[in-house]
Length: 241
Image (tube, rainbow, N blue to C red; front, top):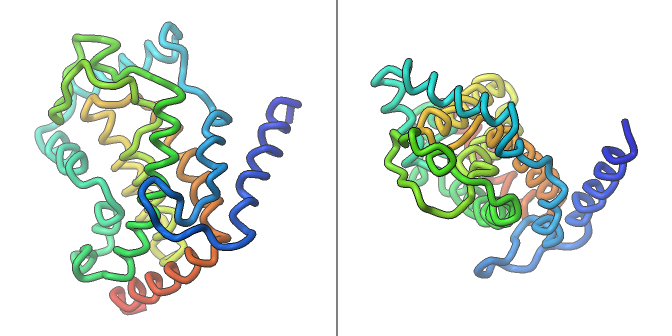
């Protein structure tokens, strides 16, 4: 490991350790619930997206073109569905039709608090990296999921992707027996952002990194542990485990 990577690892470890001491303040608008507030500033240490004029970015644009040439109507409809369902239950649906917000109140409560915190981190990362969306970088790309050009430069990391990977992490902790199925669904969910034409493949890697940072920071928080325990019992009962 080189000095730059070692330094980044040490700094990130310090941020992740911050939530182990004491409980995060009660929920309020734009206030962390489970994570250390310092994690929001730690997004500057995330791996950056490819340079806009790089070969890797050209390849990412080419991948979107290739997907749009070959995608079936069913694949596009699936991507549209995922675009419209931005929550843990879109991932949990792979476990069965019992997994709805209404039927899983403890899981819904846990997710609402997790979603609050991931939203803060992702928003900060998007603001820091300022990456244009594919259809703003190349006007020949059209979103098949209804997005229009001219919006904020906020492609990196993908919010949907972060939600999918964060959901997969917490669900796999609850049901390790189903972890392979859950992670495959998260990968599909993230890939559908590229199918939409709303993100590059590199945005998904950023999402995975963001999800891992967020989960690592949440896991030592007593309030998270309490809500997680209730949600895990609810999920396992629903699955008959």
